[in-house]
Image 1: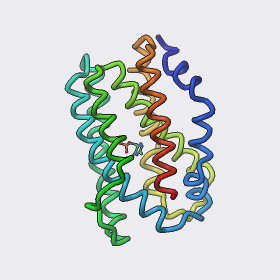
Image 2 (image 1 turned 135 degrees about the vertical axis):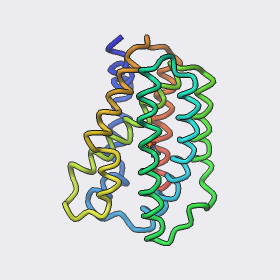
Image 3 (image 1 turned 90 degrees about the horizontal axis):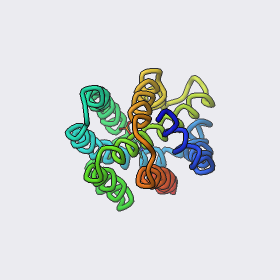
Image 4 (image 1 turned 90 degrees about the vertical axis):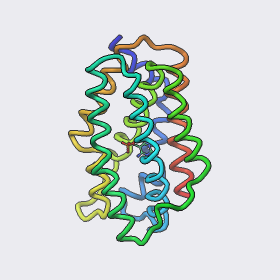
Length: 203
Ligand code: MP5
């Protein structure tokens, strides 16, 4: 079903545009994002990524075959340097990463974990949507920012050729599935959660 991801993305074209045009993304590119806004994102996203580690481990436990498990193992391994990036940036900025996250973040993280119970097709679709959304946002920042950006580490983390290849591998796993209304709903929810997350941290 090579057109599954195309179907899912084309159903979300305008919301996708809103992710790329979001003020958080635009201001990060322009270098005009207030430090407090970036710091809020950093602390919230750190909680998200820690929860995501649990979600990926549980998703890997229901992966249908070695090919899927290997792709997920790559994603799980990448979270180690990613979390180190968050911790270094937080230490430099004097941020407390143990602060209580927003309920939206708790809800988004819990939703992702809950999709594992819906089974592989929905759960892998949701993972693809999460990573594709971050790739799109940070690749947009990469393409529109100057060389002296303070966010180079974060830009590289989600827009490098390696991350792009990972997103393609996830797409290939989704494309093995026939699209269902549950997969479309999962994809739609992630897009809405992503937009709400940017709104939340942008304030
Ligand atoms: C990701 C993220 C990407 N870090 N935060 C949000 C709100 N959405 C998507 O996930 P990962 O695990 O950091 O690649």
